[in-house]
Image 1 (cartoon, one colour):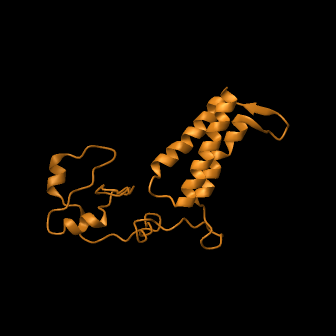
Image 2 (image 1 turned 90 degrees about the horizontal axis):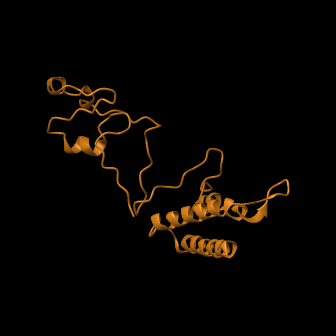
Image 3 (image 1 turned 30 degrees about the vertical axis):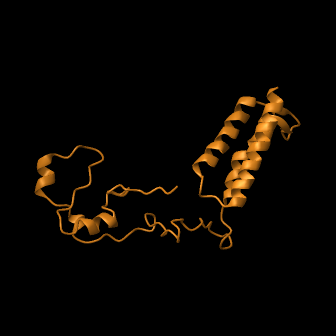
Length: 162
């Protein structure tokens, strides 16, 4: 699944580069005012001065170009060795961590057990949403780990539910 942003204007109200090229010969549209509705007269009288010259991208607005195959390069964490940023497995771990706790299989640091089957079911369902939304975008190993964990978590949930 590939998601493409087709909005004409970026978050700063600037006309995006791909639309500048398309509208080079035509009169450029004016970005909508976020606070008030512009009058038809003010839009028709003055062309947007930002269209005269391309704006320099700011570092915050600049996004890395997609790699071959339409995927973006992995996120790099400052201070971390190159290539060792967060991975799909890290995301899976964050979403899966509370499941044993809510199933009553893990204990809190003070020795208590917390069992909340509805919260366990919510986290299992969130992992299933992740599986559904990443169809075709995961490696076979990532998909295998996710499906295996979902199977095991569902079976344990059914055991606890009775």
